[in-house]
Length: 92
Image (cartoon, rainbow, N blue to C red; front, side, top):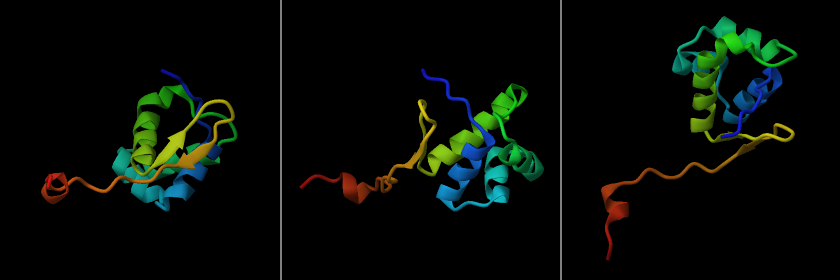
C-alpha cells in the first residue's frame, strides 16, 4: 500500500476534474464545507489530525474517477464503468 501525501492544491485540482462543488463533496464526505475550503487553500499537506475525514474526501473523489498517484502526485481521470444490469449480464 502506497501512502500519498495529499496537498490542498491536489484536492482543489481533483475537485475541479470532477466538476463537483465544495458543498457536494463536503456533504458526501460528511465534513463541513469550511473545513474543505481551508484544506484546499492550504499551501502544504492536509494536517494528519484530519486523516479520517481526508480519507472520506479522497474516497468521494476516487469514486468520481480521480486517481491520486505518488511520484509527482499527478491526477488523472479514469473512465467510469457503466452499471451492470441484468440485460448486460445475459449471455447469448
